[in-house]
Amino acid sequence: MLLRSRQVPQLGWNLEYIMWIFMRISGLAMAFLGATGMALAFLMGARTQMDLPTLMRWSFFPNPNHVVNSNIPDVTQGWANGFWQVMEILIISFAATHGFNGVRMVIEDYIDHSLWRPFLRGVLFALWLFSLLVAIYVILAS
Amino acid sequence: MQVTVKILRYNPEKDEKQHYESYQVEADPTDRVLDLLEKIKGYQDGTLAFRRSCAHGICGSCAMRINGRNRLACKTLVQDLNTTKITVEPLLGLRVIKDLVVDMEIFFEHYRAVKPYFVNDEPPPEKERLQSPEERERFDDTTKCILCGACTTSCPSFWANRNYLGPAAIVAAHRFIFDSRDRAAAERLKILSDHFGVYHCHTIYNCTDACPRGIQVTKAIGEVKKAIMTGSLD
Ligand code: FES
Image (cartoon, rainbow over all chains, first blue to last red; front, side, top):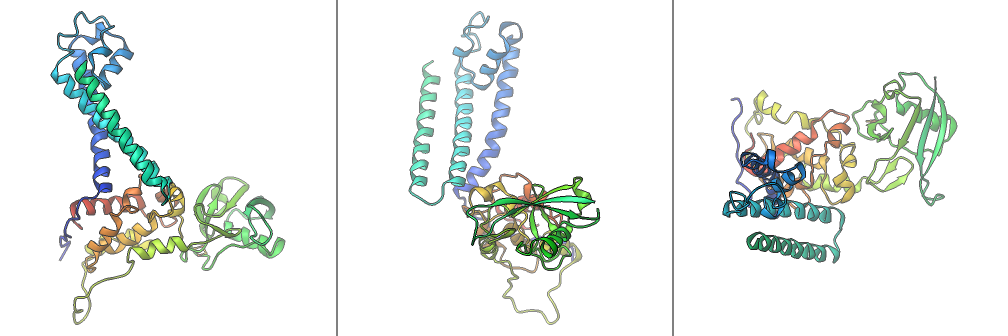
């Protein structure tokens, strides 16, 4: 008799649990997506065509508007297409949700049971939704 | 050697708020902070209030902030503080009753909430409920807890919201969740996965630093999170 394996029925999902996992996954995902954007930018010639701030803007929000003023001859060649739109939407969704959930945790930590809490939660949710919708609109329209 | 002990004092019958008072004490390097407090109370100011019982680091009464860190006064040697100026303050995050004595009720309320006792309704075997040394080893670290409150009161998440169960309660739960003879792991995990359970832990590690028993508190909390996630109690 060494270590007998023991198991309990797995608990159902709750918001705290989902967000806890989400915070970890989104943190990793943002780093990974940023690195991918940067690596692909270098492959497309970023080393000679843009300065560091432009490269950073591109890495964390790969929108063609962020690089039009660099020395890239033509952004429609590789820099503006559906792939980057998907990348942008992924990055902004992860980042906004990660950030807003951070603020939610601050609210949960510091605001005790009072009407303030549901109110602030509501405001936060509305802001999150609004900023995501605006961002996606900007991405698809540009 | 001469040491200066600065104590954050509060007398609810006289003072409006806490204030510092300093005492000069003759001390040996091997004296403990508790010895200094005893000297002050015995020879300089009998009104000083603090908790102590065993003076051997096992009852958990004398946790307080010593030079800004949660420590047991009876386990902290003057020479280990590397200074002759010692500041002693009550634990943070709990209501101060008098001087260094704090109201631990909410701490014990959280402790009771996680069912910190053995649960097994199966008929007991003739002799005893057997457990292998390996199974005993699995939760050995968290059996060391003396409920001094140093971890919970060093936790910024607890300072922010005292409804958070806190590291000490999670350690107590861990002690039974991973005990192969216990049968209430699922119930405890449910309590800990709740709003004010383990997810209020932001892995700040203050608890691990504060624990006078050297319990790897943050690791234990991590193991509970993992058990909630996988359902596995290995
Ligand atoms: S007096 Fe018992 S732990 Fe310090």
